[in-house]
Image (cartoon, rainbow, N blue to C red; front, side, top):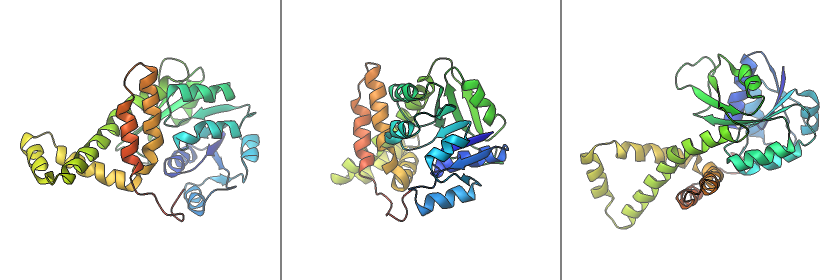
Length: 261
Protein backbone atom coordinates (compact mmCIF):
# COMPACT_ATOMS: atom_id res chain seq x y z
CA UNK A 1 0.00 0.00 0.00
CA UNK A 2 1.15 3.57 -0.63
CA UNK A 3 0.94 5.74 2.48
CA UNK A 4 1.55 9.48 2.69
CA UNK A 5 3.21 10.75 5.87
CA UNK A 6 2.80 14.35 7.01
CA UNK A 7 5.36 15.31 8.38
CA UNK A 8 8.37 13.18 9.34
CA UNK A 9 9.51 14.67 12.63
CA UNK A 10 11.16 12.40 15.19
CA UNK A 11 7.97 10.43 15.85
CA UNK A 12 6.64 10.59 12.30
CA UNK A 13 9.87 9.35 10.74
CA UNK A 14 9.96 6.44 13.18
CA UNK A 15 6.36 5.52 12.31
CA UNK A 16 7.23 5.79 8.63
CA UNK A 17 10.18 3.48 9.17
CA UNK A 18 7.88 0.91 10.78
CA UNK A 19 5.55 1.04 7.77
CA UNK A 20 8.48 0.69 5.37
CA UNK A 21 9.66 -2.38 7.29
CA UNK A 22 6.15 -3.79 6.86
CA UNK A 23 6.56 -3.50 3.07
CA UNK A 24 4.58 -0.34 2.39
CA UNK A 25 5.71 2.51 0.17
CA UNK A 26 5.77 5.65 2.35
CA UNK A 27 5.76 9.11 0.79
CA UNK A 28 6.56 12.48 2.28
CA UNK A 29 6.52 16.02 0.81
CA UNK A 30 9.77 18.00 0.97
CA UNK A 31 8.29 21.31 -0.18
CA UNK A 32 8.92 23.87 2.57
CA UNK A 33 10.50 21.38 4.98
CA UNK A 34 13.91 21.68 6.64
CA UNK A 35 17.16 19.89 5.85
CA UNK A 36 16.85 18.04 9.18
CA UNK A 37 13.41 16.75 8.18
CA UNK A 38 14.79 15.62 4.82
CA UNK A 39 17.61 13.76 6.58
CA UNK A 40 15.14 11.97 8.87
CA UNK A 41 12.98 10.99 5.90
CA UNK A 42 15.99 9.63 4.03
CA UNK A 43 17.15 7.58 7.03
CA UNK A 44 13.64 6.12 7.34
CA UNK A 45 13.58 5.15 3.66
CA UNK A 46 10.72 7.46 2.71
CA UNK A 47 10.11 8.52 -0.91
CA UNK A 48 9.81 12.22 -1.71
CA UNK A 49 6.58 13.27 -3.45
CA UNK A 50 7.81 16.89 -3.23
CA UNK A 51 4.37 18.51 -2.81
CA UNK A 52 1.33 17.71 -0.67
CA UNK A 53 -0.77 17.63 -3.82
CA UNK A 54 1.39 14.89 -5.33
CA UNK A 55 1.47 13.01 -2.03
CA UNK A 56 -2.33 13.02 -1.85
CA UNK A 57 -2.69 12.00 -5.49
CA UNK A 58 -0.44 8.94 -5.05
CA UNK A 59 -1.51 7.79 -1.56
CA UNK A 60 -4.27 5.43 -0.47
CA UNK A 61 -3.80 6.43 3.18
CA UNK A 62 -2.49 9.69 4.62
CA UNK A 63 -1.05 9.64 8.13
CA UNK A 64 -0.72 12.98 9.94
CA UNK A 65 1.90 13.12 12.72
CA UNK A 66 2.51 16.79 13.42
CA UNK A 67 2.52 19.27 16.34
CA UNK A 68 -0.98 19.51 17.91
CA UNK A 69 -1.51 23.15 16.98
CA UNK A 70 -1.07 22.28 13.29
CA UNK A 71 -3.42 19.27 13.13
CA UNK A 72 -6.42 21.10 11.67
CA UNK A 73 -4.25 23.23 9.39
CA UNK A 74 -2.57 20.14 7.94
CA UNK A 75 -5.93 18.43 7.48
CA UNK A 76 -7.25 21.51 5.67
CA UNK A 77 -4.21 21.57 3.38
CA UNK A 78 -5.17 18.04 2.27
CA UNK A 79 -8.89 18.76 1.86
CA UNK A 80 -10.23 16.82 -1.10
CA UNK A 81 -8.12 13.73 -0.42
CA UNK A 82 -10.52 10.83 -0.94
CA UNK A 83 -8.59 8.08 0.82
CA UNK A 84 -8.28 7.14 4.46
CA UNK A 85 -7.01 10.02 6.63
CA UNK A 86 -5.37 9.05 9.92
CA UNK A 87 -4.95 11.87 12.42
CA UNK A 88 -2.39 10.51 14.91
CA UNK A 89 -1.75 13.79 16.69
CA UNK A 90 -1.90 14.66 20.39
CA UNK A 91 -5.18 16.55 20.18
CA UNK A 92 -8.44 16.77 22.09
CA UNK A 93 -11.47 14.75 20.97
CA UNK A 94 -13.06 17.99 19.74
CA UNK A 95 -10.04 18.79 17.55
CA UNK A 96 -10.15 15.24 16.19
CA UNK A 97 -13.79 15.79 15.27
CA UNK A 98 -12.87 19.04 13.48
CA UNK A 99 -10.44 17.03 11.36
CA UNK A 100 -13.20 14.50 10.62
CA UNK A 101 -15.38 17.30 9.21
CA UNK A 102 -12.65 17.94 6.63
CA UNK A 103 -12.06 14.24 5.93
CA UNK A 104 -15.15 12.02 6.17
CA UNK A 105 -12.95 8.88 6.12
CA UNK A 106 -11.00 9.89 9.23
CA UNK A 107 -9.49 7.44 11.68
CA UNK A 108 -8.64 9.04 15.01
CA UNK A 109 -5.28 8.02 16.44
CA UNK A 110 -3.24 8.62 19.58
CA UNK A 111 0.36 7.49 20.06
CA UNK A 112 1.50 6.54 23.57
CA UNK A 113 5.20 5.96 24.16
CA UNK A 114 8.41 7.00 22.46
CA UNK A 115 9.28 6.66 18.77
CA UNK A 116 8.96 2.97 17.79
CA UNK A 117 12.13 1.15 16.82
CA UNK A 118 11.87 -1.63 14.25
CA UNK A 119 13.25 -4.90 15.54
CA UNK A 120 12.95 -3.91 19.19
CA UNK A 121 10.54 -5.66 21.53
CA UNK A 122 11.40 -3.38 24.45
CA UNK A 123 9.31 -0.37 25.39
CA UNK A 124 6.70 -1.02 22.72
CA UNK A 125 4.75 2.01 21.56
CA UNK A 126 0.95 1.90 21.29
CA UNK A 127 -1.20 3.42 18.59
CA UNK A 128 -4.78 3.83 19.81
CA UNK A 129 -7.32 4.02 17.00
CA UNK A 130 -11.04 4.77 16.78
CA UNK A 131 -13.64 5.36 14.11
CA UNK A 132 -15.48 3.18 11.59
CA UNK A 133 -12.32 2.21 9.66
CA UNK A 134 -9.97 1.84 12.63
CA UNK A 135 -9.47 -1.90 12.03
CA UNK A 136 -8.16 -1.19 8.52
CA UNK A 137 -5.46 1.07 9.93
CA UNK A 138 -4.66 -1.40 12.71
CA UNK A 139 -3.89 -4.05 10.09
CA UNK A 140 -1.11 -1.86 8.69
CA UNK A 141 0.79 -2.10 11.98
CA UNK A 142 -0.09 -5.62 13.17
CA UNK A 143 3.00 -7.37 14.53
CA UNK A 144 5.15 -4.24 14.43
CA UNK A 145 6.84 -2.29 17.26
CA UNK A 146 3.95 0.18 16.99
CA UNK A 147 1.20 -1.89 18.57
CA UNK A 148 -2.30 -0.97 17.31
CA UNK A 149 -5.13 -0.93 19.84
CA UNK A 150 -8.64 -0.25 18.57
CA UNK A 151 -10.86 1.67 20.99
CA UNK A 152 -14.64 1.25 20.90
CA UNK A 153 -16.35 4.43 19.86
CA UNK A 154 -16.26 7.05 17.14
CA UNK A 155 -13.63 9.59 16.16
CA UNK A 156 -12.41 11.24 19.37
CA UNK A 157 -12.17 8.14 21.54
CA UNK A 158 -8.54 7.36 20.67
CA UNK A 159 -7.58 10.99 21.23
CA UNK A 160 -9.32 10.86 24.62
CA UNK A 161 -7.04 7.96 25.63
CA UNK A 162 -3.98 9.96 24.59
CA UNK A 163 -5.18 13.06 26.43
CA UNK A 164 -5.93 11.40 29.76
CA UNK A 165 -2.69 9.41 29.63
CA UNK A 166 -0.50 12.44 28.89
CA UNK A 167 -2.47 14.48 31.44
CA UNK A 168 -0.60 12.49 34.07
CA UNK A 169 2.67 11.49 32.37
CA UNK A 170 3.59 14.99 31.16
CA UNK A 171 1.33 16.96 33.53
CA UNK A 172 2.96 15.46 36.62
CA UNK A 173 6.39 16.26 35.15
CA UNK A 174 5.36 19.90 34.78
CA UNK A 175 4.17 19.95 38.41
CA UNK A 176 7.48 18.55 39.66
CA UNK A 177 9.41 21.12 37.63
CA UNK A 178 7.27 23.96 38.98
CA UNK A 179 7.68 22.75 42.59
CA UNK A 180 11.44 22.50 42.14
CA UNK A 181 11.59 26.02 40.72
CA UNK A 182 9.64 27.44 43.68
CA UNK A 183 11.81 25.54 46.18
CA UNK A 184 14.93 26.88 44.46
CA UNK A 185 13.61 30.45 44.53
CA UNK A 186 13.21 30.22 48.32
CA UNK A 187 16.55 28.49 48.78
CA UNK A 188 15.06 25.27 50.18
CA UNK A 189 15.64 22.88 47.28
CA UNK A 190 18.08 20.70 49.26
CA UNK A 191 15.58 20.33 52.10
CA UNK A 192 12.80 19.41 49.70
CA UNK A 193 14.92 16.74 48.00
CA UNK A 194 15.90 15.36 51.41
CA UNK A 195 12.24 15.07 52.42
CA UNK A 196 11.40 13.40 49.12
CA UNK A 197 14.29 10.96 49.50
CA UNK A 198 13.41 10.03 53.07
CA UNK A 199 9.73 9.68 52.23
CA UNK A 200 10.35 7.20 49.41
CA UNK A 201 8.40 7.10 46.20
CA UNK A 202 11.32 8.00 43.93
CA UNK A 203 10.40 11.66 43.44
CA UNK A 204 14.02 12.91 43.13
CA UNK A 205 14.62 10.44 40.30
CA UNK A 206 11.32 11.44 38.68
CA UNK A 207 12.33 15.09 38.87
CA UNK A 208 15.68 14.33 37.27
CA UNK A 209 14.01 12.49 34.38
CA UNK A 210 11.41 15.25 33.99
CA UNK A 211 14.09 17.92 33.85
CA UNK A 212 16.11 16.03 31.23
CA UNK A 213 13.08 15.38 29.01
CA UNK A 214 11.75 18.92 29.32
CA UNK A 215 15.15 20.42 28.52
CA UNK A 216 15.33 18.35 25.35
CA UNK A 217 11.80 18.72 24.03
CA UNK A 218 9.49 20.32 26.58
CA UNK A 219 8.79 23.24 24.22
CA UNK A 220 6.96 20.77 21.96
CA UNK A 221 4.46 19.92 24.69
CA UNK A 222 2.85 23.36 25.04
CA UNK A 223 0.19 22.63 22.44
CA UNK A 224 -0.42 19.17 23.89
CA UNK A 225 -1.06 20.61 27.36
CA UNK A 226 -3.50 23.13 25.85
CA UNK A 227 -5.33 20.30 24.07
CA UNK A 228 -5.52 18.38 27.36
CA UNK A 229 -6.92 21.48 29.06
CA UNK A 230 -9.62 21.68 26.38
CA UNK A 231 -10.38 17.98 26.93
CA UNK A 232 -10.81 18.54 30.67
CA UNK A 233 -13.03 21.57 30.08
CA UNK A 234 -15.24 19.59 27.70
CA UNK A 235 -15.73 17.00 30.45
CA UNK A 236 -16.61 19.68 33.00
CA UNK A 237 -13.30 19.24 34.86
CA UNK A 238 -10.87 22.06 35.79
CA UNK A 239 -8.68 23.05 32.87
CA UNK A 240 -6.25 25.12 34.93
CA UNK A 241 -3.93 22.22 35.80
CA UNK A 242 -2.79 21.81 32.22
CA UNK A 243 -2.92 25.46 31.20
CA UNK A 244 -0.36 25.93 33.97
CA UNK A 245 1.62 22.94 32.65
CA UNK A 246 1.66 24.62 29.24
CA UNK A 247 3.22 27.70 30.84
CA UNK A 248 5.90 25.55 32.51
CA UNK A 249 6.85 23.97 29.20
CA UNK A 250 6.63 27.29 27.37
CA UNK A 251 9.72 28.32 29.32
CA UNK A 252 11.80 25.41 28.05
CA UNK A 253 14.60 26.14 25.54
CA UNK A 254 13.80 25.81 21.85
CA UNK A 255 16.23 24.51 19.21
CA UNK A 256 18.03 26.91 16.92
CA UNK A 257 16.80 27.44 13.38
CA UNK A 258 19.25 24.82 12.07
CA UNK A 259 17.97 22.28 14.58
CA UNK A 260 14.25 22.89 14.15
CA UNK A 261 12.11 20.26 12.37
